[in-house]
Length: 590
Image (cartoon, rainbow, N blue to C red; front, side, top):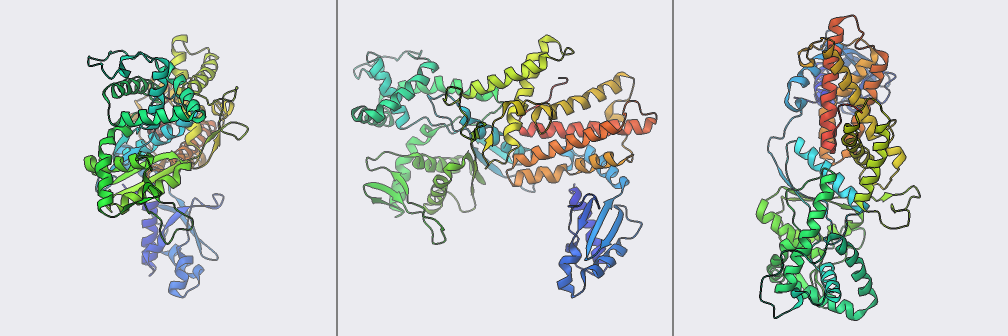
């Protein structure tokens, strides 16, 4: 099914052709002067040079060519110096909405060929608690994934954990210092290691920062951690088994945190997954003449003549032979290409990692790790800041845990939901949790990903303005109207027939609803969940304007009332689909 703009542009193209001009000049856009018209076409301005003719003369001829019997346009007006102002017929909008209601995915066209995308987002480190900095990767990545799937792409989501390297060496070294008698550190032990880990996730959360601090202050401790890391990478029996215990306990906690956010992954892989691929990959880089030794390190040059800034060589191995993030990222690309043959590998991380991905992507291309036709994409996001404009902290100045942030916003919403006496006490927690997720996710996603934003609990949990709770409140209002209509003996919404509209506010609502497909396409093509957020907010505003101007359930004209019910049912379906793609849902009441 064509988008609304596609269909009316095609109609204008026929008018241009009928008047003797190139039909491609008929492209229509939403009016930038809604006080004058609903849509506009500037094709006459573009065609003036091509046809050596004054644009207003072309516009006059095209307007005449449309004629009064158009099934699409209620009016087409030529305005000097050559603009075409357009308004749509109610009957055309009615037909388009009826077609949307019948079509799967409201008529959103699916791609001719389904593509496969591997998405890398999340990226938590094992043995460290998830903090507020992990929020954006999870929420933005999940929304982009869901939007891509809705647009017909096949997506494999990989959390790509930091579960290898020096950070693991530091944790194991600190465990050795605290518990030297553990059997994992006894090289002569040849029995089975205990099934239960000798520590908890809370222990690990305290151990890593302590170990990191020591390594910066004590050179001998740092050297010991480096040696432990080497032994881990060589999979020394006791060290490797202890690492597996750390991994299992940490990942169980990570999964709980992401489940709270309704974020899920197909693959729970980490850097350790590709450790065994690194030696062979490095040898291929050397054999192909791509990698060479510079100041003891193995590097690949990735600078290009067109660079406007210096792009340093990509370091593959440090002078001591240790691998880096670049190494494991390249090995991960190799692994993904080998296993999944994706059309695109897509990363969602902090925008401060932009240079890292430039180096990795160029090295992957140069060394033949990835086919030329496979896209590599990085979407960088900004930071979550407090009201002071600085990175979001706890009251005592520490980095806030993600679980604490989620708990705080749930507590805030629970207090507000409990103030509604119509909601049964047993329902309040579930509803508060739903609304809290909308507040948290919409508060993040409504901002352009690349920009920093201020986390404002009071604003995000408000039921007024551009917020998640406002969207849900609007949807609950629609659900209530539909429920009361049926309870009063009305037809099922699915059996109600949409007829032509009865007012200006209804027409605005209808036109916004008709834009669903083009908006969903744009949100996907631009990897921009904020585009979808803006649409949902606009749709809710347009519904509320219509609602306040019309007494829907008290309407005496039964055909008109049923038409409104059909309209509301479709609007609700569009809203439910949209917020599902954003990663949250609406309760029945609130």
